[in-house]
Amino acid sequence: MMHALIQREDGFSGTQTGPDIADLTPFLTHAEIDVPTPGPGQALIKVHLAAVNPSDIHFIKGEYGQPRRRGVPAGFEGVGEVIAGDTALIGHRVSFFATASGTWAGYALTDASGLVPCRADLAVTDAAGQLVNPLTAIAMFDMIRNSGADSFIVNAAGSQLGKLLIALGRDYGIQPIAVVRRAEQAAALKALGAAHVIVTRDPDPLDQAQAIFESLKPCILLDAVGDQFTADLFFAMPSGARWINYGKLSTDAPKLTQLGQLIFQAKQIEGFWLTRWMKQADPARIPEAFSEIQKRFVTGKWTTDVAGIVPLSAAMEKLPQVLAMPDGKAFIDPRA
Ligand SMILES: NC(=O)c1ccc[n+]([C@@H]2O[C@H](COP(=O)([O-])OP(=O)(O)OC[C@H]3O[C@@H](n4cnc5c(N)ncnc54)[C@H](OP(=O)(O)O)[C@@H]3O)[C@@H](O)[C@H]2O)c1
Image 1 (tube, rainbow, N blue to C red):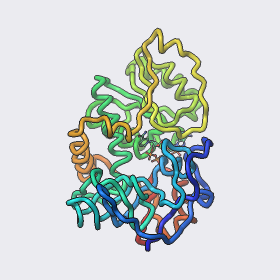
Image 2 (image 1 turned 135 degrees about the vertical axis):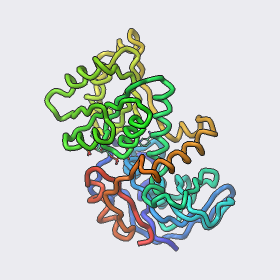
Image 3 (image 1 turned 180 degrees about the horizontal axis):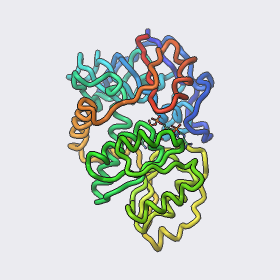
Image 4 (image 1 turned 135 degrees about the horizontal axis):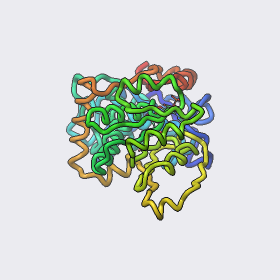
């Protein structure tokens, strides 16, 4: 038997309430259930630490791109030891994305082909969150490099993923223009490598953006917010600009006021989803990316800011408080 946070609902909810959560009880139950059994092509992992990402919260609310399954543990990613299954990695520490039974549990089940062996010197918090955000950062930064851009805009820039992207921009000499809602994040993001920081709660954020666009002319907008300001920013960008939406942190339904720009200025609106990218990417790029990801964490080019590690036994009560803390990630420790 194992302890787990299991889903209470099936399918989609039809709501769009965003990533904030004050109470887990409508969506999850703390329960003791059977340890899952690996089938052909699967691996069973004893979970050491599980990440909590905005996608997990969208998912348990029934607002993500795949349906919930009642009675199955939640939690997309984590790190642990492979203890059984159709793999040569038994006994190894791996990061993984749980495809069959989630990571907010003592044991998780996933496709054996997706296991990512961890370097011994990779910290457990870096390993637990190694897939969703770091691989997305690498994949989207590849798009920036392939476009030949010398600057890019990233909003929700104080998020873990925003900070990973800013650090990549710094290291590869492609200037990041960071967009945040809280002014107190600006100094840290500039120190990290942001060329400019636009604060959306200032009285004149669009004027600030237009002044920056005169010199930098950014053509890529990496957007995890999807609010009216993002749409206004896109329409203020130069001809040929691409609005790449990869998250929906805001519950706004923005108005697209100047769609003619798609026709006459060759602007584009598109979406990015890591799950799709992994199916379409050059297969050689993925192991290469994990090697780069682990090296970047171990050498300090990237860091994981930790808001708190919550024992699984107390997660129903304590996780919302840790998720509400600014500037860091929450993790669940299933061994406590
Ligand atoms: N499409 C994909 O494949 C993919 C893959 C990975 C991640 N993502 C997305 O990437 C985004 C960032 O993930 P993360 O794990 O890095 O996040 P995180 O570290 O948990 O940080 C969340 C951030 O969202 C900001 N935020 C929340 N609501 C907002 C709103 N209404 N307007 C503006 N900002 C808001 C917060 O800003 P404050 O500090 O001001 O509260 C915080 O900086 C999420 O949307 C996630 O779903 C997508």
